[in-house]
Length: 452
Image 1 (cartoon, helix red, strand yellow):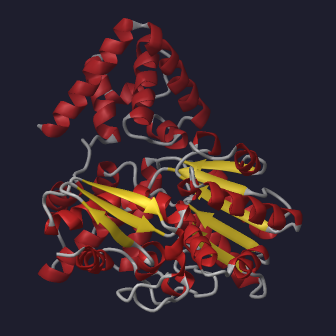
Image 2 (cartoon, rainbow, N blue to C red; image 1 turned 120 degrees about the horizontal axis):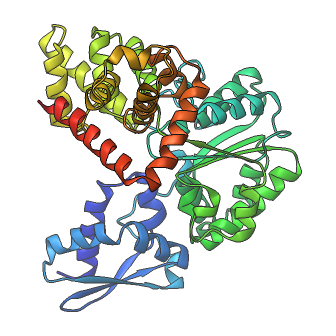
């Protein structure tokens, strides 16, 4: 097999595994330059392509090549500037990356890249995201003049993209003349590289520097990409100086993004930074009720409560669970029982150990040999106050309940009581070994009860 034949077959395999836009952007004008017993040498047109392919696609390429030549153990990439003028026959006719990057939903707005299903009407607000939500509302009313830039960060599947697109959709709804653009940092990089390769950099700059509201998702992926950061820096400055709004998201705070230039970091930190944490139980339950209504599912509240208690950290997993249940409903045509829900989650979602508020309160009262009603009643007996504080601590730590919920659950108390109890036990547990052992035993008890 010649080098050209090997690379042709490899490209044909890669083409089926990635989007057409990414294929054109990163694999156009690449060739195999050498082949030894255990190594393949691949030529690429510039440093951008070399850096990105090594970071993103090297393992994938090696896996495909080893399917043809199992003896190959490594790939080496080198820059061959002459390749920037070459268009291999095996590559499809070029088209702009932005024309290839439509999202799967047919209703995506091609000008803004916004998905109309992401709105504030179906965005569930809880203590885990209320600051980010409030800032988003303020931005819509004062575009470019408050919280600029607006930087949202949080883990995967917590609703960052929903919030960002809801801002864009609402701004566009209020004034269709406002120029809004939503884009991921990876797609921004793809378009930038394409513009450089095809002498269209002026077109690219003009496209993004006339925007009124620029939303870039997953900005952490520009880490260590020097020229992409350079372009975002100048785009940022142009928009900011003209009072245009910039909204960014990341999986971590700006100060924790490695390989981010200090000048960009300082600009990202110069506006409003809001985090989105894991949703508390009531928020998870509210999200499930919203999704149930959207999907028109015939499942009862007990089942939703079980799902909310099972999946604690990821909104996307909550929706995934409901999608699995929807499929089961379509197949069996009858409402599922709670055991059906448990089976679905056990097989597909792999939920964490499940604990309910009731189990925690029961375990605490049993451990301290008191009645559950005493934890709820408004008594100040010393032998009751401490167990009640521990119950509040565990409801926060293990159940992820909000402070208002915890206060209501234990006798309709104010949320400040729950905060005080949680903070007190949090302090005491660090220095009190006996308390550490007591809480450890209580946890063993309610998890054991859950499994029994």
